[in-house]
Length: 454
Image (cartoon, rainbow, N blue to C red; front, top):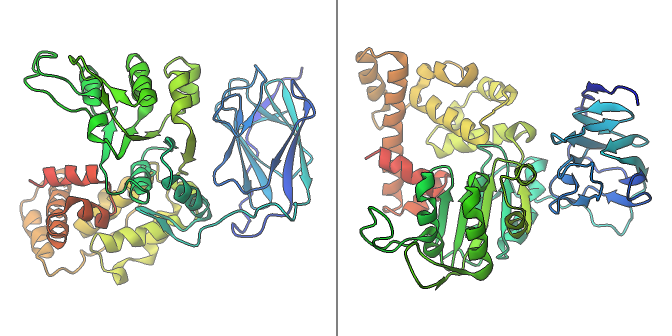
């Protein structure tokens, strides 16, 4: 066999995202265990289609040489984009090893021992058209790009159910905001929404936080306490970063979900709980299963439905949409948002995604011409926005202290957070849920800001 050349087939960017797709792509297995099988990709899927051996894959193969999640497939304009997902054996297009490639039809794609011929056929007139929402947001999630508008109909349907959902995406893509929106747009909206972050609790306390404990269950347990599963009874529990949950606790969580009951640490009776489970992760859970770090049975129980949030760099036009949204939401004058600043932000890669963009705008509004500390220089020098609340005086007082730049920046951001939290709480009569919703951030993060603001 020839030695493969490792390369990337360049993407085509000269496309109109809203242009109608011409026909459908069909993958025909020309070699491998399922020779002759056909998979039709009509572009109607709201997210990328996964191909591999995992039950979470929409295109599932039985090839033992294929990875659990081998490649992702999506329609991009008139092309079929193939993206290798860190597979064990690699992905080959016409004998060339690729990380990502845009295909037009006629190519051969090899994954493991399976070879797929890419064909293009006329679309079935009776086939459903891809559904694009006309809205630029779903609950707390904002975005008018094609990538996001394709997701909103799926989100609306899932919000109306109580099935478990796994929300995947890079750090900062808005997984918690989407989870809270699924809760608030569904039948359990008036019931509790509880967040449990697997990375924010010491390993020794995770079991107690999940299931609760009775008095005397361990040293320091001076009283009984409900766990998050009990706290979320009747409502929704978001288990954030579930890929970091200790392996020893995963069967206990699975048992609680399947039986609908929990037993507190140190307790001798079971308590019934009715909770909808949403799970968020930045990790590839299939890879964690393959590595033995995540239980296959728990993954199957949670991944009844799956939503993949795209990174901000893939959401064409949403940087400007989100920037204007956050600028006004944080109290900025829309007329003072410079167009050259938007252009620089559009050109930036945003490794921290939506969270990084929002924090950048908050710092820019707070610091004005001190905003040189923005990530990788994506900000520009601007005078501080006009304010009737003493903002300019706060900057003058801070500058008079002649602090080093990092300290001055942190002090100014702290000042901004205090004023912002106080004002929005006053506007909503101290109602934290409404204040957080108006701020466009999750209640947990708002509570953190409130605690830091004293």
